[in-house]
Structure formats: C-alpha cells, structure tokens
Length: 290
Image (cartoon, rainbow, N blue to C red):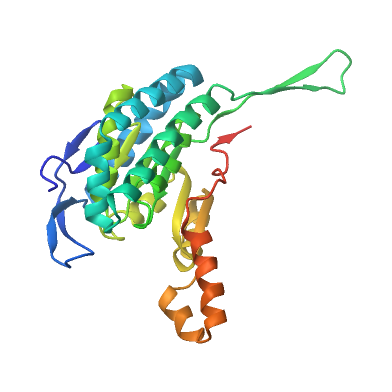
C-alpha cells in the first residue's frame, strides 16, 4: 500500500531508516509497512528545508500563488485515489472522505489568493517629511504536527499558508494515517516549488519531534493534537524561542464519557464534540512577521 510513497525529503520520496506498521481501524489488521524516519532522516529534511527558504521567498507572493493553484488542480485530479486512502486509513465513508479532500483542495486555493495580498504599510515619522516602510517577510522554516482524525484537511491547513507566506515546511502527520499526507505531498510536485519547500517525515517522537523542536532554524511550529502535547511543545519551543500556534484537543472522549452518565449530559457532550471535530473556519495565525 505504501510501496510508491515514503518520506518526502528534498522533492523526492525516500524509504527512510525505519518502518512502522499501519493498522486498519476497521479490521485491526495491517495495511502495510510504512517507511519511517530516523533521526538522520529528520535532520536531512530540516537541512533541505533551510536551504529552500531563500528560493521560495524569491518566488514572490504571485509566483507562490500560481504554484498553489497548480497543486490544487493536481489534488482535484487525484480525488478518487485520495478519498480511498482516507477511507482506508480512517474508516470514513467514501463520501465523507471525498468531502474532506475537497476541503483540503479549497485550502490551497484560498491561501493562494491570500498570498497575493501580503501587504506592508507606510508609517508617519516624527521627523518632518519622513516615512517608515513596514514590509513582511517569511518567518522561516515551519514544523507542523497533525492528528489522525482529519488526515487531509489538517495538513492542508498548515502546508498551504506556510507556502503562501514563503516558509518551507517539515510536516509530521499522524503515524496512524501517513498515506493521506503522502498522497498530498506527492501532488506538490505539480507546483514546481524549490526542492525542500515541502518535506514529510513519519515516525516516533524521538526520531521526528525531537530533532524538529531542537533545531534553531525552525522558527515556528504548529500543532493539532492533545492539550498535553501542546503544553510540552510550548515548553520545548521556549529553548529556541520558536513561535507556536496550535489547536489543542480536550481530554480523551472515553474519560469524559465515564463522568457523564445522564442522558442530558451525554447529549451536551456529543454536541460539544461535533464542534470540536469539524474542520473550523478559523485560519491559522499568520506565518509572517513585520
């Protein structure tokens, strides 16, 4: 199932130094052995991402917008393949999987157009006749971590704004649903972005999260995950003063269900979870700095 994919580093797939077994949520049987990163693989991804910062920035907002539209076109072309991968890895019905992939495509088109409107401003100086020009530039390499429940929508909401802003990105998707992200980054080839603009690593926390958080060249990290992981990420980001944006989840549903015995309590709980699990309309914090 994963023979044609792998880690995506420097514009190509590589098998990596490790493997992990991906299980079907329906049958609980193996879907296949997926390539997984070693520490050296993650560091290689960070190296090429850092090297891609200058050429990606040089493309300008309009050039990156055109690239994102080409990527969206390729994603639309591969909808059938993608929705089957989503359904296989998450157990979602094909119709729901297709809607999620469509949402992911829309993220690339949205941020393509937002990338054309990265405006600066002119500020009046206290010196007569003087003006200050404020411009915006990419913050730097971005590390992104996503959960399993929306394996297409969540990576898209991190990749698209990062590329639109001119920031190379190293994506670490959930090890439970790596194939969906692999299909997505394969579509990135259509954008003709600089090698290293988008990278994907899958694997253990020690082999992926650790090197990303320790690298001072990573200037921003983004997380969709548990509150506990988010708290740890804030602590780890402090060592190298990284910008952090996240969508932390609440406590495990099983734990909360045990505390909500009444029918009324269960009904309120379900309503809350639907709001939490739907892809929100909020946009990530800006990946640009003055």
